[in-house]
Image (cartoon, rainbow, N blue to C red; front, side):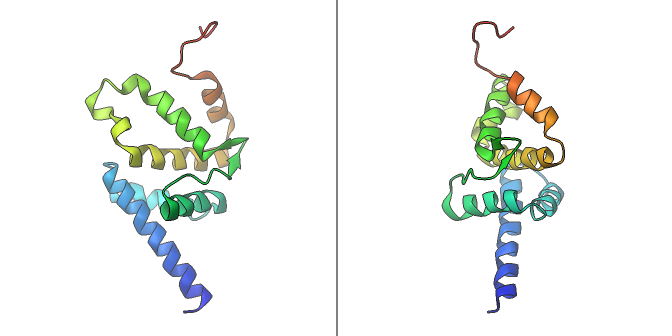
Length: 132
């Protein structure tokens, strides 16, 4: 196989993986295709996805505004704690959904990080002195 054929095969594998994760997350195929179209345009997010696909863990090397995929995922988990009592929002049982949404947030942060940085600095499920 040529380098180009290998690259195309790897990209198709990752596309299929995103579609599979989308289905497991309860999202539509259209959602998966749209997300994939944006992921493949970002070398950093693509690398994070490929590493997760290959090793089942976060690479955590790509940063946007000082935040990694791991940081975004932790914020997502924290952010959704308020919804854990709602059965339709049981993200703690939908790791695929949290992962995809974290990739999505990282992609959005590439275009405009400020709103997400502000939210991540201000939103937390942990109660601490002077929080409010």
